[in-house]
Image (cartoon, helix red, strand yellow):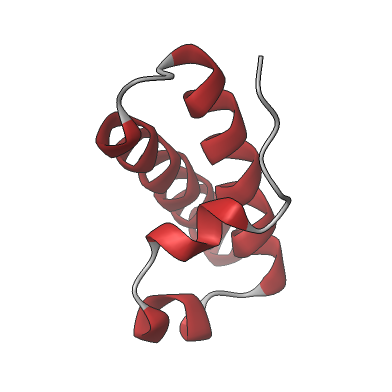
Length: 68
């Protein structure tokens, strides 16, 4: 398994999106990219989609919890 620099996954995001993400969201995205890359080594697009989806699910879950 290859290891990527800790912030490598964030380079997949457009600057405008990255700037608006909280540090927690960036951490979730980075961890998800690392996991997705380990599972889909030859498909960077798939890794991005899986990571973005994971971050969005977490964001929605936290929003629901805040609403009660």
